[in-house]
Length: 147
Image (cartoon, rainbow, N blue to C red; front, side, top):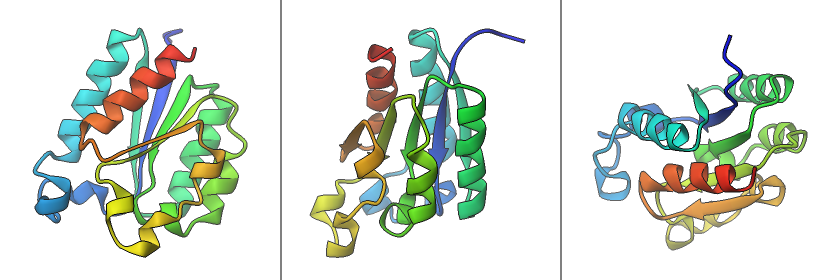
C-alpha cells in the first residue's frame, strides 16, 4: 500500500455525459478526459487522485464518508444539480477536515437563477467556477498549496 496522500475528485449527476451533453455550455471534454487531467495535476503535487462519479446522492455521501475515514488530503467536488438541492451532501462535507474545493465547469452565476444558490459553498474552503475543465486542475493546485 502506498503512503501517497490522495485527493477525492467527486462528480455528481449527469457529469458522466460530459462531451455530449449541452456542449455549448460544457464543451466537448469528456469526464474521462477530466479524470486524466486531474491525475496528471495531482501527480505534479505528489498526490494521488481518487475519482468518483455517481448519479446517486447516497453513493456520493458514502464516497465522502470513505474520504474522511481514509484521511484524504482534500476533496474536489462538482456536485452537479445536487449543489443546489442536497442538504445530505452539505452535511457529509461539513464533517471533512481537509480542504474542500467546490467546482463548476460553467459560471453558475451567469446561468439560471436557481443555480445561484449552493448548499456546498458554506462548507467549502473555496469555490472555482467558469474556467471549463481547467477548473478541476485549479482546485487540485489550490488544495495542494494549502497542505
